[in-house]
Image (cartoon, rainbow, N blue to C red; front, top):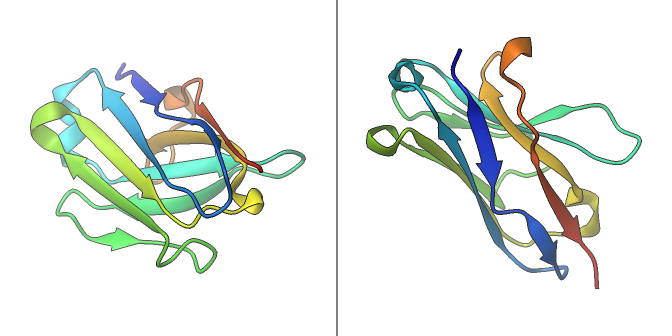
Length: 115
């Protein structure tokens, strides 16, 4: 079972930036589409970025133009660059396959946007 471990969260002021990382334990990682998801307080988990094995990216309108997903297959790592953060981005952020695999949810990393 591939383990996915998220890191890079923290407290940031509105308008600030953060870069999240997700490290995978297995080599099979590079052949799969991957996604970043988030779950805000009292909200359902939602997809915020998706990258195919070939590098094509997709974003929902809520984050398009502010978030950027990338992957480094050699390092078995996927990244989420988040810019122009606002309080509505406050959530626990997770990486997983796309579509998500219920067996692969990790602990996530908390992102809090507040002044």
